[in-house]
Image 1 (cartoon, helix red, strand yellow):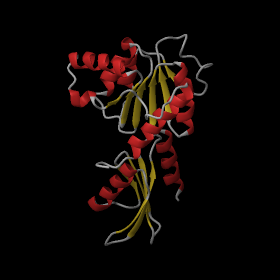
Image 2: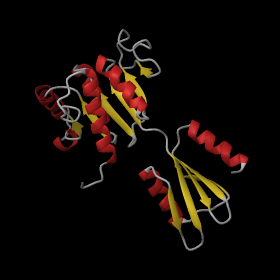
Image 3: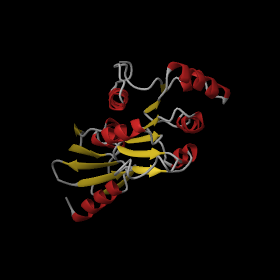
Image 4: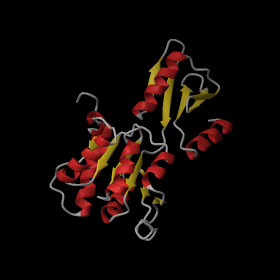
Length: 233
């Protein structure tokens, strides 16, 4: 790999940009595709760019033979993100588990007594009001949003923003009775039943979880299932 390509790749990864490195396996020529922008020794045509898009979407490298050459596409996607709304006890365990699973974790809570570095070491803390925080966090298909506060004043604003974006997972802690009230409030705010149906609530897989750690396992398991489930399965 040429020094210029390596430097560009390192910068793209530092910027957490969706990046693919395309290598011509016969000539050794390489090109970077960073957020759709191409730079390098190969000028990829439409067919190769489609495969680059497929590899990035699948989060998996790809070997392919086109008429003109044989290529290897190496994917350097940014990590998946988890936005936790509510710096509560379950969130402490959940954030640690998610970080071990490779997520970039952000905890949102305007309550300074809860959102402290002592309670969430090594975790990014955002002390803005949840709707302001989520508006600024550029939620995309590599993002999960989970609300844990049980407080409509904090959970509902976050859910309203999440439902206008395309996170791969939205979850909300609370009983069926709690969620029924949440559905009423979101419906009154203009959200359709289809949109509200995107919320996993009660959150997590039904494994009989009781303790904060067990609940965290159930949520992370459901997130993983949702992330990797194939459409129609």
